Amino acid sequence: MKLENQVAFITGASGGIGGEIAMAFAQEGADVALAARRVEKMEILAEKIRGLGRKALVFRCDVMNDSDILDALRSTEKELGPIDVLVNNAGIVSFEAVHELPDEVWDRTMQINAKAPFVAIREVLPSMIGRKKGKIINVASVSGKIGLAYRSAYAASKHAVLGLTRALSAEVAPLGITANCICPTFVDTEMFVESIQKWADETGKSYEEQREELRNRVPMKRFIDAAECAPLALLLASDDSNGITGQAINVDGGFVQY
Image (tube, rainbow, N blue to C red; front, side, top):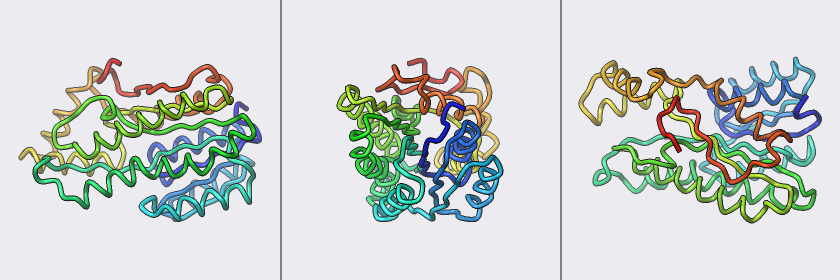
C-alpha cells in the first residue's frame, strides 16, 4: 500500500488518464478527491473507490474558473485532511494555424492547461511546505518538448507547464517536496478521438487517414492506453520517487527520445 492514508487531489478525473490515476491511487491506499465537469462519470468512479474501502469526494470543477479550483481544494482539506499528492491532469487541445488562432482559443487553452495547475499548486504549497512533504504531478505532453503543426496554443501551454514544474522543483527540493511532469502522446481517449477529427479538418484528410498517419508516426506503431500512464503517476506519488524531481517523463511509445 504505497499511498496508505494519504490524500490525493486529481483534476480532469472524470475519465481517461485522470480516472486511471485515481483508481491506481485508491488501490494503493489513498483517499481521493475527484474534480472535473462531468459529475455523473466521477460518481461512478467514486463508488468503485469506496468499494475498495477508501474515501472519495466528487467536485464539479471547471478549471476555467480559479474559484472552482480553490473551493474544491479547500473542501478536500476540510473533509479529508491536508493534500499529500496533487495531480493536475485537466486539459484541452486546440487545432488552428497560428495566423487563424483567435484570442479566445489562446486564452482558454492557457487558462486550462497552464494557469489552472499554477493556481492549484500555489494553494497546496503552504501546507506541503509546513509539513515538509508533498508530491506534485503535472500531466503535460510531449508537446511541452516539441512543436507540432496546428497546435501552437497547446504546445505553448504545455511548454509553460514544464517550465513551471522545473522552477518549482528547484524551489522546493530542500523541503521534501517533489514536482514532476508526465508527458504522454496520442493517448487513445475520448478527447483524442475528437482531436483526430479536428486535425483532419485542418489538413484536409479523412478521419481514418489522419488516425493512420499519427499511428505510424509512433515508433511502436500504436497509440498509448490511458492506463499506461497510471503506473508512472503512482511511482511519482510514492516514496519510491523521493529522489526524482524536476523531470518530464514521456509515455509515448518512443515518439520523443528526450
